[in-house]
Length: 337
Image (cartoon, rainbow, N blue to C red; front, top):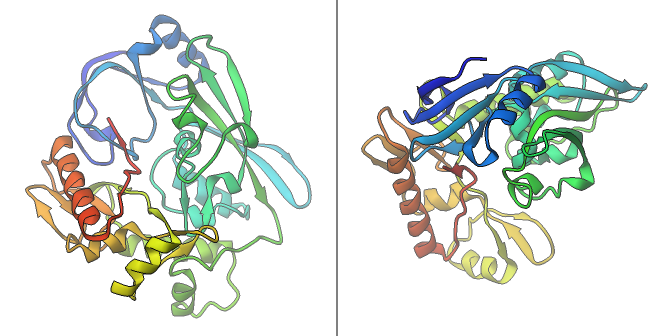
């Protein structure tokens, strides 16, 4: 293991922010992780996965531990289902494609989400009607104090909308080292009802889609809306879609009849944050090198030399403008560091 000093994290965060790590080390297995944790106080570490769901607003004056654990294996299977273990450092989209190549169903709606496997449970990532919890079996995580690995079952993780126990009571206490997924081998359950999936399938003249068709449709939709972080720095959806009460929604619907929504319960509805930002007149808005993407208002982008503070200032402007217009607060989906 090599510890590097004053290390630039520009290539390790999808916004392309040139923040520095006081010390940086990439670990390739649990033995290396345990070794570096044994030498470093828990309060002095910063754990870095794929760097796709964070905004760095300052240098990290800690030891940054990059989780580079790789590997996939079948844990168990029967005629209908398979349990796959993927190490935390596996690239999420590459893992999804690998599952599809093996005709394992369940991940197809989560195609092209940036980041690594290990950070997926923390955020309970989701897209197009599917969340990680729907395919989650268990995960292993190392306690940063005791250095012991613990298994967390589905019911242990307290999954919610873009939320989990790892973002709340266990934040900073555990590092996820691997995740087990329960996937189908046949009779796959297809989710085409959310977003533009059916429209995309019709465009391709696909009447009886399979899991690969769903994935391809999701990829085309995401590519049409979302910029490639390698070309234009971004972290995907910057804000969560807000959930509001039916009474508030009905009042807003009188003024904005075209306002879209998705029912959460009899009294709660989810409103697309991108639609709110667009209607507030901020789509394609730009301040210096920090901007709102021209195709998807939910995405904030770095046009080149924006700092983390520049992006954060823009986020605050978006929140204030949407709240003033609609009375709806927007909560960041991205972790602000």
